[in-house]
Image (cartoon, rainbow, N blue to C red; front, side, top):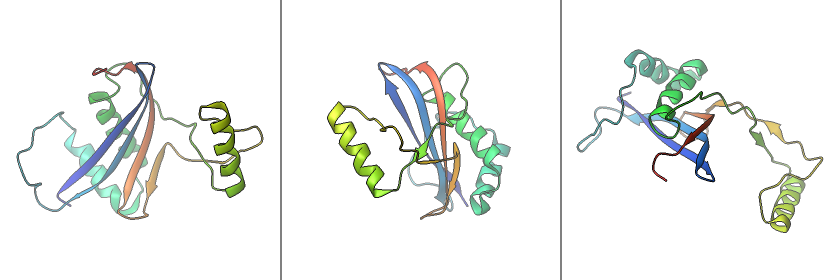
Length: 146
């Protein structure tokens, strides 16, 4: 593996970033093309552990620590950055229809009472497509570019 590819996104709520999600995958072999501008310094040993973990998904602690560094340099400039453990996945078609109907009725995202879904880990190793760590974190710091 030549380098890591990182995609980071933040959820903004009234001018405050409340969540940051980081996707980490293999960026390819060799050096990326073009001129690179470093945006942060990353611990090389931690980056190496994350790169190795993309083979088997075993080092979730390294993936989370790496994602925290990315979040700190982007959406969460201060304060604690804990795991977002409140993520749920809904796959039952009747539940999805009820969620959509209630959300449209109320004009906002809402999960009707009685629909449970299943818990998704905050640091999730996915192998559908390229092996990828998806890390969801909480933060409560103003997004610096609003």
